[in-house]
Length: 89
Image (cartoon, rainbow, N blue to C red; front, side, top):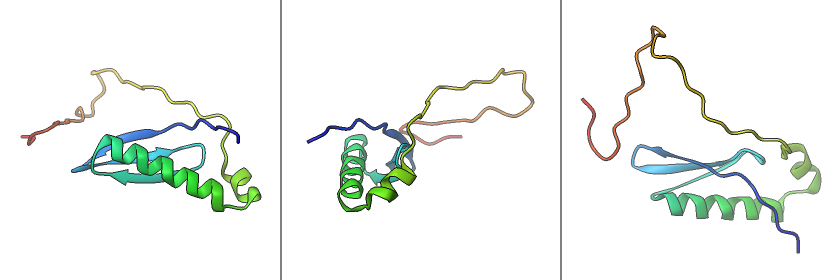
């Protein structure tokens, strides 16, 4: 049995978490970070079990680059405000 490693991008959205596997363009969600990760793992496993090999190959992206991007504060757009665990004002 082969073991594959895929990327999981997980971000907070409203009251839960959204998880994305960019290599297969597969997504899932969960109430917690761990649940979103586990649900994504299950979604990827189910896709790989059920999909035709040609579909897997057509969706599979071999090179995925994830990096942080930043911008200078001098840009005239207002900064994005994020509030974790409370209300924003």
